[in-house]
Length: 290
Ligand SMILES: Nc1ncnc2c1ncn2[C@@H]1O[C@H](COP(=O)(O)OP(=O)(O)OP(=O)(O)O)[C@@H](O)[C@H]1O
Ligand SMILES: [Mg+2]
Image (tube, rainbow, N blue to C red):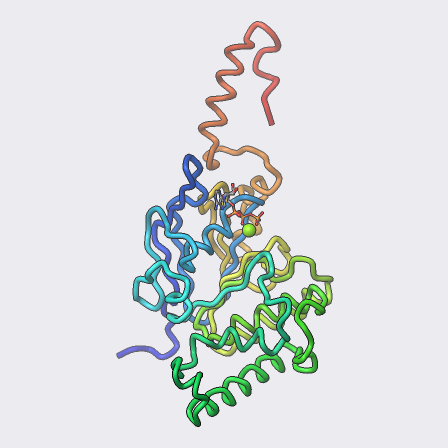
């Protein structure tokens, strides 16, 4: 009945809106990530990308809309989202600075360890077995990201690029089906960025779908099966790398050039019209605001 290779939706965000007082940071955004996909989320600074991630992961309760993981609507609670199967990294690195590299990964495993409080306190055989398994898995993940040799180092002593990779290992430790990466190559040099590209492909090849925010367009267009562009909280364009790359509205959004139908364009036109009528005796319509 079912074709084994058919992609199925892992993430379905529907009509997600997030308002902060008078500011609508995310407006009515739909986005699907299918199994086996790497999807990119781009947009100028302040477009609402991180806010959208926060809505997906339960850090914010969206003003409107729903988020589903593998067909089930998620409650907007971070620990429930993680245990359902979505893991993330943060734009501003959030590691435990005074813990070792290995301990940081072990922290990421806590949603997947079944041993309860009493078992942990009494340190019975069940607990010790689970602890050994967690340790082994954490070391495998450090091997995978190339940091096993630094397992005992304090995370605060790692160079910036390695801290970003460690965040990825910690996210993977919760054994997710979907990984959300918020600017994973920010602050990395070109070699580290290329290595991160390979790492994301390897993660996808392990059966984990990926949604990634990045400003590095070469990284995004090399990596992603599909790309969505947010501008002022709205999804402006979505398509393959080729389609998005060739869309003049995306270029215009990055360059800050107004275009017909752009989010916020109506308001801008009204302001311009008001300014023009107030100044009609001066220089006619030539002096448009950019
Ligand atoms: N907790 C909050 N309270 C009020 N406003 C917020 C909050 N979080 C985000 N915003 C606002 O929402 C808008 C979108 O911010 P967001 O951080 O999501 O953008 P972004 O696309 O991730 O930008 P960048 O590329 O710079 O990381 C901004 O105007 C920001 O000031
Ligand atoms: Mg952001």
